[in-house]
Image 1: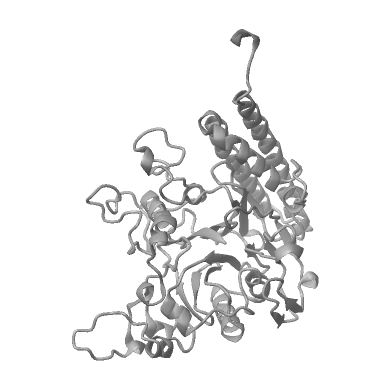
Image 2 (image 1 turned 180 degrees about the horizontal axis):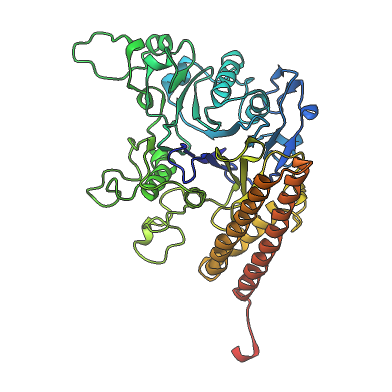
Length: 493
């Protein structure tokens, strides 16, 4: 899967929340219907079997309830839970398919019968009570079963966000997002430095697989230049070059991956560096883009939606652009593409009581034309408009309605842009207002059945979303119909 991730530490966010968001994109030529559901402990498997790799794993018998955004038809390729929050208010996002190099894959080959994106959320999220526990549990599973792909995985609680990346078949590294920073990751190994002293010591900001130092030494993965030629003691290394050792710098990275990190950082730190022109500090094909930065202003939900919806607007590379050098348009892979299945943002709000502090924002279809919608996660069910995605295209489904809007609006981008922008401004404003009103009511008086109350409020949000989304569909259908090539009226005669 090709995806894009942004992680926001609690001091970098507008309200002190930790926020973790990601687009899930299908492979080229594929479109995977999704649904937003709740998985109950009694529905969680005790003995898990993967559809793709056929790996079998016995799971703990005490799972927590959790939300997820799985494939609508798990019988096809498995669950692919992707994004959720459990009953302990711990969130997980999986996965960002990433890259490696020949040296790593020769030293620790991928494992065809191992675990992967299909499995990770299901076998980890129900069993963890902190972001750190998530790293530890998945790390142990990777070392035991191996993986058949390179992946990045996010874990989040109220205080911390951890980003974990797999290294070959069994190894892994993890770094905590600094509280005052945001981090961005396209489909490329992202972590830039690793403090091995910390990872093998207090684990305050870094963790890794237990034999990583010997793995680096035995396979000559340390590429730093040493003037005296003597081998350094890696256990004391505080700034190990992860990208040189484990990552890739291919030609395809420079058109497919690094430009996405560049456009996100350019948006959130426009004055920190020079981003454009021959004197730019960083360009779309720069291999040394920072993994994390302190933003120039606190990051909002709207900022996250904007960067995950990027098609290089404001640059020469925008495929919808009308001006400038035609040869530059579409040169780089945008963040928002036609094959985005959904975008998910988990927001853990420390200023609200834990029983209704977690929100999960959902958008489906191409992010250029959709909107984030917030839902409370301390629930037993989700609205049918979001959970009942069928194989047949239907406007009864949020997923399918957004796919229809994107397909109709894309060839008539300029003509539909005003309607889409109005929807993207008004819908989240109305939804956020409903969340605020609900919060205020809950802070004043606790209902007898909190989950039923939150489900009712989620349904009110879903009803509003359906009304507004149907209105947008009507608008873009009318505009697209006017633009049909066989348009002809009597006055044309």
